[in-house]
Amino acid sequence: MIGHPSDFHRLFDLPDSGVRAMSSLRIGGQSRSPFSSFNLADHVGDDPNCVAGNRQTLVGLGMPGQPVWLNQVHGNRVIEVISPSIHDESLTADGATTRQKGVVLGVLTADCLPILLSSADGKRIASVHAGWRGIVSDVLEVAVSMFNANEGILAWIGPGIGACHFEVGPEFKDWFPSVFFHPGHRPGHDYLDLMGVAEARLRAAGVSQVVQANLCTVCSVDRFFSYRKEGDTGRMVTAIWRQ
Image (cartoon, rainbow, N blue to C red; front, top):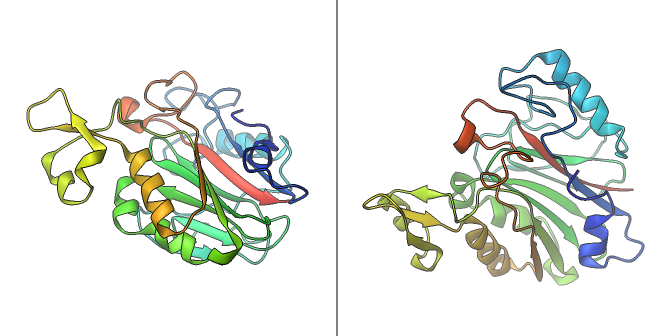
């Protein structure tokens, strides 16, 4: 796994906060190709029994329970979760936040950015699914707005497609500042630093500390699922909870 459940705690020096987080790899599960092997998504065409087995394995790694599995749609809705017993797959959102202990907030990704947030005292946490569409739609700003900025907000940007592989068309320059582009291989195309965009927008929204995992899913397809590289593939989870 990327990150023992205490890594988020260590990254942000949250003494006695009880905040824990993890991000899964693609290895060590039951799923067969092209979802091999630790696929945690039930919407990609994988065998449901394999997904269920992988999710049970996930909980056994130290979580207090199953994550709240969202129906992610590349939008900007962030929901408040008040009970660890909510596992309604009709929950359509691209982020979740809570103040409750024992509630695991997770997002599924395979190139989009998984972003975790915590207040400095660890009393409010959030997870965000941040692809380029969601970022354009202000999903990060919506998530940050659910915190008290005076308490200090911390963020971690997990494994996602890096600037080394995210080649985009000229229309993207209407949505993102030019500083985040560098020339691509195809005429009229550029590489976009989506991680840099996310960090800049988080800081502008009031996040006081941002840590980048600096892990590209396309570069390390042996460890991560990558939709852009593979097409049919599985999904990893990045999750956060309060003990």
